[in-house]
Amino acid sequence: MRILISNDDGYLAPGLIALVNALSTIAEVVVVAPERNRSGASNALTLDKPLSVTKTGDNVFVVDGTPSDCVHVALTGLLDYVPDLVVSGINQGQNMGDDTLYSGTVAAATEGFLFGVPSIAFSKMDKGWDNIEDAARFALEMVQHKLDVVDKPFLLNVNIPNCPYDQIKGIQLTRLGKRHQSEPVVKSMDPRGRPIYWIGPAGIAKDGGPGTDFYAAGEGYVSVTPLQIDLTHNQQLEKLKKVWR
Ligand code: MN
Image (cartoon, rainbow, N blue to C red):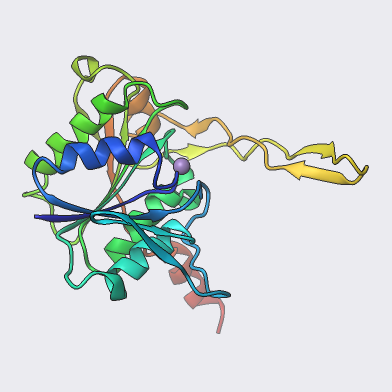
């Protein structure tokens, strides 16, 4: 098996390194990852400049672009084969509910999925890198034992609790919850007296009831949500077809 690994925290992130170490035990792994932290990059592709790719080790390529750039370049020219799986992460911090729209971690996996390659985004709950080896061990087990029955190509969004491996309660299959709208921007002043704005924190869970990713994660389970990309609002579409003539 050949696995392409990327992320949005940058190629030096402990979450990526833990994932590489774990998956290398069962597969040929190639890393194509951003040179720096591009969290929140969503599905952005860089179209206003060329991308540089630097080989920094055996099967490690660093790109001065976004997570989507990395997987796009890998699948459309850098690699001379199609990997069996694209794995993104392990992200520092959860990607649940509306986070999935902004997440570079999910975006890297989405790019694989859009090219027809089965893809998984792994995130670990909470900030910090504690228990990252435990999360990687879980990711390995999932790749090894859980994927045979999933229809291909798939796009799975996986959030792993921030706890030792033994304390992970198991897997819950979930739908995306929803967040309240984000907190307001934080306005400040730069040293020259000009206003600057920091994007505020994400909102807390609004729809976090049973069946959602928020709920499963809160209960200590790994949340697995199968994703799709079609954004069509079919109900609205059908209604408008009747009234807009
Ligand atoms: Mn990130």
